[in-house]
Image (tube, rainbow, N blue to C red; front, side, top):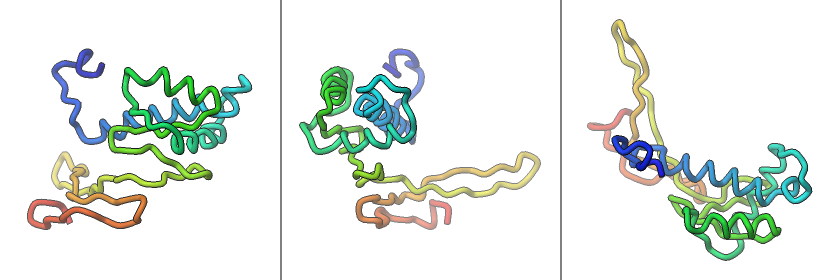
Length: 144
């Protein structure tokens, strides 16, 4: 859909996949929440409570052709195993992410009249599941 609306843009920009996953995780968690089933206003607490429903059931890749089935199962109180762009969208019972990779960035200050911070990838990722860094840090081409 993005490329249809913005054909001149690239969908491979950093953050696109994680943004896609985040938006759908929130929408799916709302559908799974007690508030949705009782027709009550959605709260942050109810979204947190719906996140654990995104793991522990049938695997469903989150894409256009599968969204209706995913929402129907969640509204019915069923668990699904949502598969996002970076893998399983899994949270524990307290709403904390069970695993996944986070790209590690650094900021480098620039000088001069238009001083600003420049964001660059370090070439490394943080694995939420193992709490370890992965990837090679190249000090010659990456910021320290």
